[in-house]
Length: 479
Image (cartoon, rainbow, N blue to C red):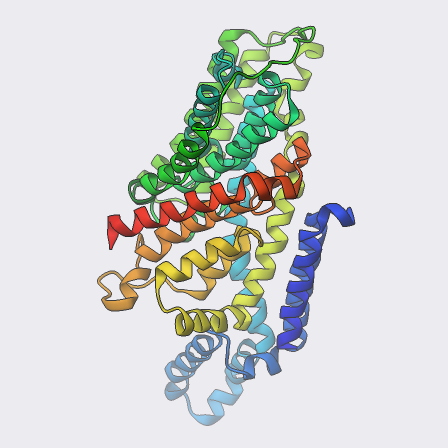
């Protein structure tokens, strides 16, 4: 049954990867494998745990032993039996109880990530519904291909750390539809947006789901990830841009303007909502630093402030005008399936961690690679095929955070250590190598119907060169 859990996970992942041909939403598959893996685990708990691969089972047994050693010496044998402690401890120390406690422990960590994402996605959706992004997009007037590409890439690179790479990609693809008429030219620009969004998201604690996971998990801190990963991320997009700029000539043709819809928000309202929303997102790291509370608390606080602000702005307007701008209606537009996908996939990965599968993988990587640069490079390349969320979740499960002051190989795994910082970069940018390798790429592919083979021929090599350039930069900076 130990290997059957792994088989369920792999089969489920194949179905997730084939989401579009099979026409089965990945959220549904993720939820099923999340439940099935834990179901098989608890039904075969005794046999699986007796294999000795679970890193937590031994610690759990030691805790029970410490309880017995603390209580039993103070009682006679008859008092010990009459007290019922033997039965209580026997039940609490069972493999089934251990599995339930492990699930509850992981659910706390998963919930923190989900509430954070839900808050962030709602804030961005509020800004979008109020046309707040027009504050930026209306300023772009150039039609020169090379200049436009650099402008779009720069906006994407610096917007992604604040809004996250997925949201930024969706916004920029919508913008490019208004700027470029030719489909293949637009495909190229959209593909470069994917590269820039993934590179930009890698150096921010809130720019990518994987960096959010590492930040919430305590592997990295906000200031450190910005300081150490910014330059490698910048190099990873600058190198492809420089390469393509030499051959990019001419101007883009803009589509004919359609009859403009009447806006239901004023320019001042758009600016206020945009600045407040972005300010709420930027406030999250500050909130965590000051209060030491989990980041999702700061995100929910920012959402509450923006919610009240929009209620005040629209309270004197007719309901038929402002109905679509009410937050309770905007919440219906939030991408709930994405939240459920993360719930399912993170649950499944946590099962692999608890049962010991990830412990085995960590040992294999250490034995065959034994170098944090090679390990992270391999994880990044794998993230172009497999979603980076479970890869990072798996890495967090495979390796513990080392204690401050650790020396030797262990020093790479302290908080803000080389392994965690490089993992954030590699997992964030490695997915750009294939169009299906990142949430941003999948979104762009779905919206623009970008062909997988076209991306492989035109973009993948550029993305790989940029990815390796960033790793080389990181190595030169810190080794």
